[in-house]
Image (cartoon, one colour):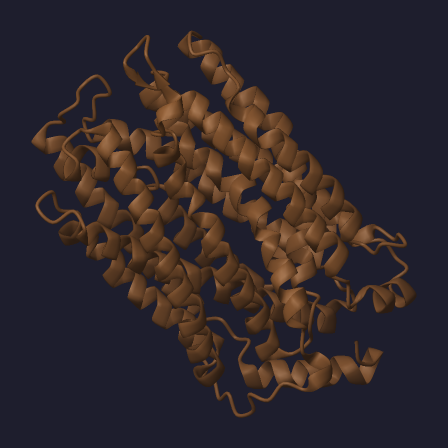
Length: 478
């Protein structure tokens, strides 16, 4: 690992991004989080537990959706790199994507409760395939825009730390959605049970409205710093080949995305296991109690994420990005390993500590991953003479979502391999053991592999200072 020497942590006034811009940009994270990741979070409780669809079919549908998602990202990254409008390269796509993503979110769960398994499976697949391209239409330009807000090494971390902290608020939706369905208004007297499907429909309708508003905040308040420079000197179109093949030739980028793939694959493979560990181990099979605990875990997740982002941003300003992200991987190793002890029926509150520590790790890792990505854009410009934020954002997203697609598919297979039975309130001791063991073991493997690849990452603070000086000598300041 190259030694990082963060000699100068001073940020020039002209490189600083106003707090209003950082906050507005961070609000856009709701569309990425809820548009991409809320559905997989709710799919198993709604389609598998409430509607009775096989966990294998749920996992298969989520995998196929993510594969299509991975294909739509390069398209919108390429389109936004080549767009030339009076609103810039990114903002028109951000506006259209935010509107349709917000409207479409609740429609994903508008299914009759009496449908057969095959009908449910095809609805999951068909509705998501229509919806996901609108999320890509917003998210690829949005991710690219974040890389263009400042040329300063440390201010990039500040931008992403604002985004990461605000994102923790949005991630609470993953935990309060199911407790929301426990409200009395969703009680079905005919069955004597809570109507989880109706509750999720209402919940997603509320979130969809917030997504629309937050997208407008990004469109109106976040400007494109690099657009005038790019429009004046970059007249050649970025080809679709560059959006995929040429981008993958960048060695620092390859190391970053392979590490991110390992991290996200390890966590997505067991994304549902935490829920099942809470319901069937900690809560003893009581779904309502387990869902309520899920809400409490959301509060722990939010607190852990809020602590993780500023704490690791502070460390990053003093140690540099690479040592800090390796430290984060070490924290993740301990956090995931501790789930074996912190998910406890006798001390259920301990699982809140587990949720907070995992959020601390994930928030720090993804914040640092994104600020490293902004540095790679400068490295690539020095070597190619082009600003290709859309190409890199799309290619990175493609790899990440391909990994998540595999992870979601494997999550259904992993759950089935544990011996879990949907028609049993109390699971066998063997099934509980494997749910707990895999919940810890698979993510640990992922963070270890991520650290192994990141160890070779070459863009230190000293190197980035040299790159910026060379770029500004060639094309001026932005």
